[in-house]
Amino acid sequence: MLAIFKKDFRAYFTSPVGYLYLGAYILVLNLYFYIYNALGGGTSLGSIFSFMLLVMMFLTPILTMRVFSEEYKQKTDQLMFTSSVKLSGIVIGKYLSSLAIFLCLLLLTLFWPATIALIGQNNMAEVIGNYIGMFCIGAAYIAMGIFISSLTENQVIAAVGSLGLFVGLYLLEMLTSYFSTAMPGWVASSLQFISVFGRYNELTMGLLALDDIVYFLSVGAVFIFLTARVLEKRRWS
Image (cartoon, rainbow, N blue to C red; front, side):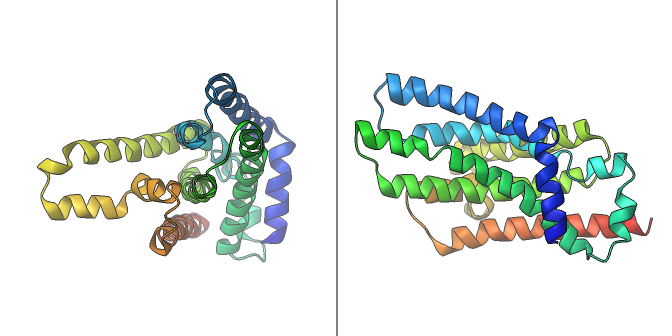
């Protein structure tokens, strides 16, 4: 698993993918930070993290589209299937390498609260909650994206499929919020229970409930399991 992690982590920086992902994120988010916080004098980071969540839907597919699709296209998946590493270990290793790139991104944004500290005062509960929430939803998105990547050898299809899934979840959240009063109580409660964004919003307010953390961990675990099952089926096909 460690060998898979190292190989894939290095691969992000021996191809344009890692630089494109980090560069696009930092360029767009820093521009927003400069306009809203530096020029506008805003001392709250809640707005930029909300914008970051929107950007994440469009850029996470860039990070995950190649994870398995590239292996299929280059016919190196057979090497994976015949290696001594279990399929679950392969999936986890690849997942952790993508998650490590996302952590690099979060580390690059730490100058935001540092800058706010120079011009005002940070709401530390908000800052910590947003970073934890962003990490949790990023971890869930990456697991979903890797699962989509395991279904096809076409990276474009993998990217579009992941984007469609993320946008679909976002639209479902909006429709649920808009029509919640018109829904039966049990339907609204069920949708609220599985809502990715509802739980994320609670974390960003500094409400670090254990069930929300477990929920995001469970989402990641489910999609990692599904990815391993897809590889198992492909191995014997």
